[in-house]
Image 1 (spheres, helix red, strand yellow):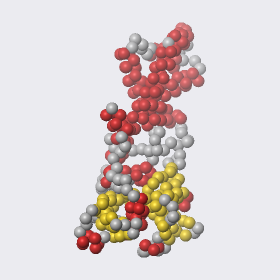
Image 2 (tube, each protein chain N blue to C red):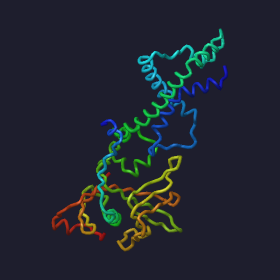
Image 3 (tube, rainbow over the protein chains, first blue to last red):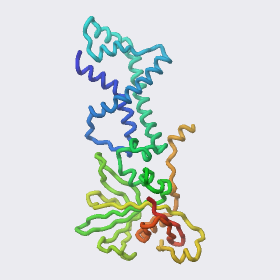
Image 4 (cartoon, rainbow over the protein chains, first blue to last red):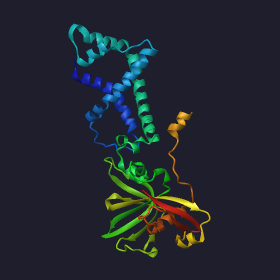
Length: 261
Length: 56
């Protein structure tokens, strides 16, 4: 038996798990490295594949007249050549080629859909924030969106956030500059490293002026600003809960911090 | 239908639609808001008052 054929057969058997994992990890929540180790990926696909095959075989054998001939499948995988068993296996393969194709095509499609909806389920039930095992690989997502507030032992909740203010300390032309703005977006590369930060309503000041007055802040005449990570020294995240007060008391008005819009 | 809604609805966010001036004002006043205390503070942006609290 040709080793290449056995390998292809194993790939087809493990494909449902691979596809389910691909769909599960296809969002911005997951880091999709370009240096994917195929052997590693297929190893992680064994259990999902076996689960999906078991499920689909049970459906197939209960709802149709078809069944999976494990004896022939074993002959093909192990490359049994005695007593013309290989020829018999290939003859059956040819005989049921449409049924086999339909089985695999349906299973591949179902696996992809199940992987996609399993991710949706994990997100909907917030299992990724409450259970570390389900956490997605893109750690920046939880930091930038503020979902890290839903991690165990962290006070307050993500749903309370109305505004996210980000301070980005940068080195610009030899000077240290602090950029401040509302969170708009962020970008990561294939390795999950931060590439750039996208701010809205940006302002800046020189870091040397630590006790800065309002006049030390320069309002950048732009609605959006993108800061590449190469310039970033560190990032400060502030999550706010903002609620409009219709009629504050006079005492409250007196103590209020203010700024002209 | 409800199952589709279960998977397709967006996550709840307290963020309400408001004028860009409020967001811009919050950016400029944020450095005055104390991080040391978890208590809310009253801020005035333009003609509107807001109660703001830093989370986490």
